[in-house]
Amino acid sequence: MVGDNNNFKDLDSRFGGNDDVFPITTRSRLREGQGGGESFRSMKITINSVEQDFPAGTKLIELVNRVREANRDNPVLKSLIEKTGKDHITFTHNRRVVKPPEYDSIELKEGDEVRWMLPYAGGS
Image 1 (cartoon, rainbow, N blue to C red):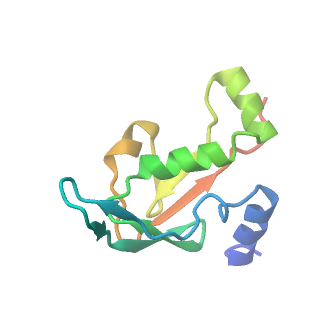
Image 2 (cartoon, rainbow, N blue to C red):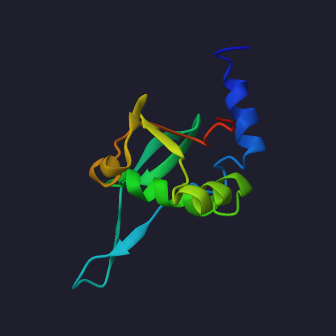
């Protein structure tokens, strides 16, 4: 059924999804010159319909790299990379398709929605 969110869950399960790619974590980093740790504020971002926690200041390029790393063994993507030099994964940010040159300029914010899609098979 069109518009049914369960369709996305089914696609995630068939294509490896992103549950392992974006574990919910909290990060703590040491301030330079101080012995104590500084806890960074986390924010909730929805990725392929799954809400995840990320540290504030996370850029879209970090998510792109994680998705690519998690799917590096995907046979469809391997074939595309061999033939074209690119994986052709499409990323959207808040319902807008993002072109590769923009990946490192977008800083994610609380409540953002990111989706990634594998390319469709077929062609002429």
